[in-house]
Length: 114
Length: 112
Image (cartoon, rainbow over the protein chains, first blue to last red):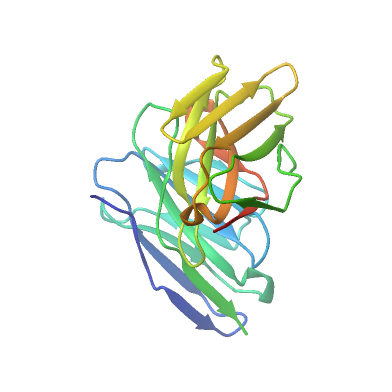
């Protein structure tokens, strides 16, 4: 069964460093998303991406964040200068055209900022 | 952003009984509502959805009910099994699904 894969599973970084989280969505899906979950809190929407551009973003997704689909298979989330409060589990998701908007999530990348 | 609310952080149910998880929403523009299940250290997994024009959708042991006038939906699991123990998230989707908003989740414990 096709699945969304994310790398790395865990990354530890120093405050102020750049981080890139990578995702390979399901191959025939057209919509891509990043969500995050701070420990013990809700799953928060960050950004959605369709047709090679951002379609929606939340107030969390400020200038420190960017997304890219560089090669038609990978979908990346970059945090330019990490802050302590960026420590969270980051989930990538994708979905196909139509339907109920069912999202397929990856296993997540845990980011720890020290 | 409190568009989707799950007011019960946890629920404990005996195996074989019914589990009822509740969700309220404020955004009338949602066109689909979805339930996801999440185990620790895993991503959320889609469980069941309902269109905003329906009031019930059933899939095996899982049934979702939608009350649009009350802006309330519920997920019924019957019979509950120990493997159902997980965090359940309610979510609303609109605008072609560009933005799906999740509730805070309800942790379900099913006791054997």
